[in-house]
Amino acid sequence: MTSPKARVSPRDNEHPVTAALGDIAVNAVTVELIDPDQEPRWNKLVRQHHYLKEDRMVGESLRYVAKRNGKWIALLGWSSAAFHLDARDRHIGWTDLQRKARRHWVVCNARFALLSPKSATPNLASRILSLNLKRLSDDWVERYRHPVVLAETFVDPERFEGTCYRAANWIQIGVTKGFGRSRLEFYQLHAKPKAIFLYPLHAKATQLLSAPVLPPAWAEYEHQDDPHRYPLSNAQTHSLLQALKALRDPRRYKGRLHRKVAAIVAIAIAAMVAGNNSLCGFGQFSRQLNQLQLRSLGASRCRKTGRWLAPSETTIRRVLQRLDPAQLDGILNDWLGSHLKDTPICALAVDGKCARTASKINGQSIQLFSALDVQSRMVRGQRQIPSKTNEIPALKDLLADLDLRSTLVSLDALHTQKVTASFLVEQKQADYLLTVKDNQPKLMRKLARLSRSESGVFFPSAHHAGSRPRPA
Image (cartoon, rainbow, N blue to C red; front, side, top):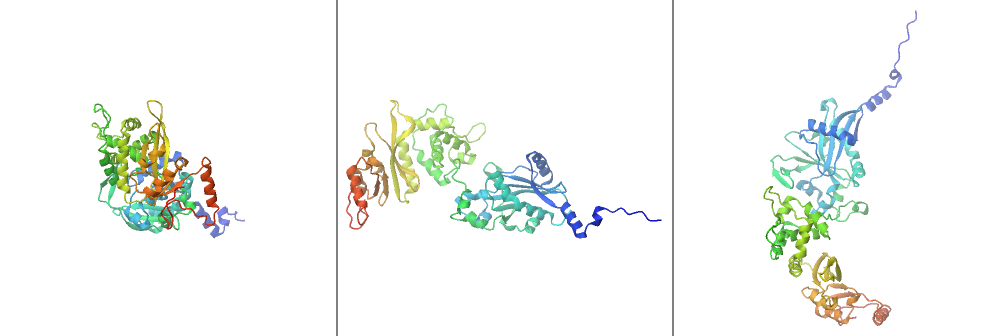
């Protein structure tokens, strides 16, 4: 009697190595970005399994899940980096301006929670972390249109040793000071410092973050000036408020919600320095100020809630329209001069403009004559031109208080006059750059002959040896 044929499984015919590889493929761990419809499940599991019991993350953020055989085994969350971190900032070696422009290139591993016991698979946490780091920058580019070059995280030494981070080649650079944010822009000492770990996602991470000049391929990812960013230091804010105390309040006392006119004007000036050039921009800037900034600017406080109040666009507009422009201009010039007194004016651009959307009661437009410091982009002087005259006689008054020795002053064709050139060279000891047009044909021909001369050199000032002050 013949024995029945034994049943042969397909896997029994496989080579042992092929079978082992198949088992590895089945049990392989993958790290994936979660879909929007999976976010509630991710948030719920983080609250259950992470010791912080909190799923919210600040700023730009990405949520990942690690899977094995289709089952969720770990959760990872990445968010924007800390604003200030002494140990990290010293390690990178960047300046405050570089940190503000490039902080978004640093990300924080804000959440990492295993859903299965660590003992089930050796080195599971470090494997998951390494897989996530390999794709993190590409995912950030796809979501937020900029790469990331450095990752940071914080480990509570009372709970963890950071073994998985060390195994994944993260480096510990120091500890925090033990402060935590308790509410908007307010920090409270909790006396539980955390260990700080960093991981470079780019081979030259610290060099890029601290580079004085970036390669063109990276320069496009820098944050430019934000019109909502507060631009003044604490000392500058204090000195500005002190200077504005001399302003006469044009409003009636009764019914004032914002009691200090200096605070309203200081907010408008800070908005202008930040790059806003319209009243709507002033209002948006004011609404973006946090409680600490409003308090430092001397804003009024709500008696019911105790919160500092941000003046609206209409409040700022009404106050600015009623102020004495000559007094405000004098105060601002003195304040700017006190901060720029040690900074020479290299180049000064003088021009007159009609104030947009502004007019007098009789319907005539308001003409403003301004002198702009090209290097600092600050207006060093400004005058309103009377209706029955022009910019030419107002020039001397505009530049009277400015030290223009060795300064290049540029003006448009209206000021291409012998009187103007003589004033700049002989009285202000400045160089000048004047525009010549076809309405001065004789001067045009003289300049053409000079450009064709053998020397090809023409000095419009008295600061060169052997040259005599000769206005063109």
